[in-house]
Length: 219
Image (cartoon, rainbow, N blue to C red; front, side, top):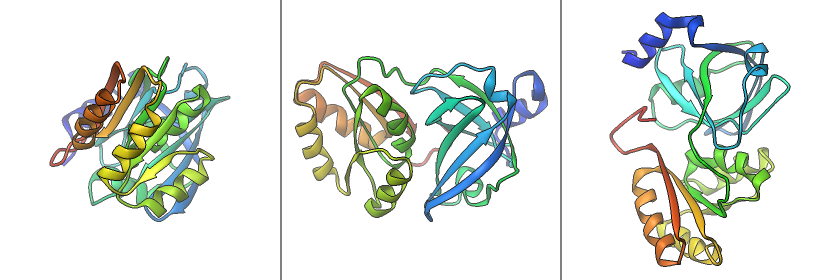
């Protein structure tokens, strides 16, 4: 069943929704799709790293994604296929030529002054968008080889860890001299990361939950 937000956006249509066409779909790993969108609906909108767009899926559900770049009417999204939720189904079926309707860009994460970012698989897009600001990322992921392939396809360097303990150790190492950090992705890792970062002396930790176990489409 479609979400209430999706039904509302569908009814409002062109009053709030912009459109772009899928120009290319790359598959760096079966769990990921790198989707390039292009269209006039992208040219008239301003964007900065950390912003989000909310996509109205073919199922009339709404899912949030972080554009990796935004220039000359073109943007790139990294989609993660996990489970059987609407976002995962769209990730597996999106094809060149599809029309994508969306709201945004909208402010999501403030990356100005941030020295370190941590998250999970769903944070690879924002990690790639933050690279132009010199922000390094430490990601706690379930499938390291898959995330490595996705990161290579985006030409972004990140520290990847397959366990909480390994990720926490990397965070402690990278936190030296960092005053402000961002923790995003799953709610459980955000809680652990905030503890580690604060214990390491990071004064400000900006948090943004993209998902929480047992809930869908929270952003």
